[in-house]
Length: 240
Image 1: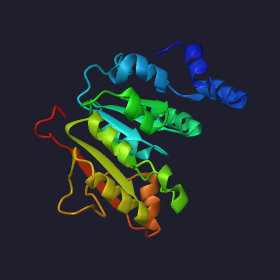
Image 2 (image 1 turned 120 degrees about the vertical axis):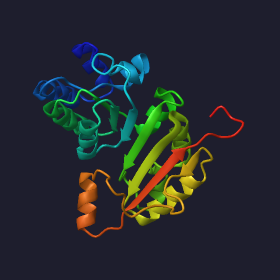
Image 3 (image 1 turned 180 degrees about the vertical axis):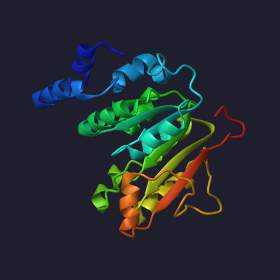
Image 4 (image 1 turned 90 degrees about the vertical axis):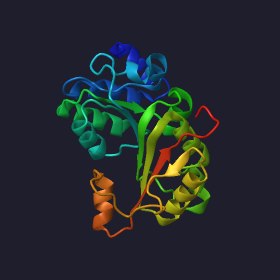
């Protein structure tokens, strides 16, 4: 990992003094090894470089965008110790909290970055690389004027497809009905994806799936859940 002072300088380059103070004070409360990284280190070392000291030649490479409270990522990483997991969040505090959880669990196959998932896919990862991408219950932005802020848009899905290996899967979950309709339309419109749940457009439940904290809450509240899976396919006559 990069030197701590260099890391902090990068991390808070455009942050307020309050966040710098928070980063310095909380950095020492993480048990074990700090598994946080940043976009610059990802760009410089590459995905595998973040894990090279402890997980050489990972069996699979998985990205979760918006890990929230972290239950899903923690359980998945614990069950698949030979797989490298990169968790992305735009929330500074959630990354810090998750780093503590990862440290307490002693997981060596997880790295965490505060970043926008769209940027990571479009600028920081190579094509034909990831085995899975998970987007669980992202903000549905329910007001019409805010719909453009939803993460599942045509450009995002196109970049996700390019980053996946052939046979790799983009998993998406939502409890919001209008957002579910948009997700279905966007996935259906991406030629590099085939519907892994066909003939169903989506499933209300996926057997054996690890539940997120939000998923448990939404089920208890009686909200309808929608699960999508787009599988990257080989396009005839293309290198993709």
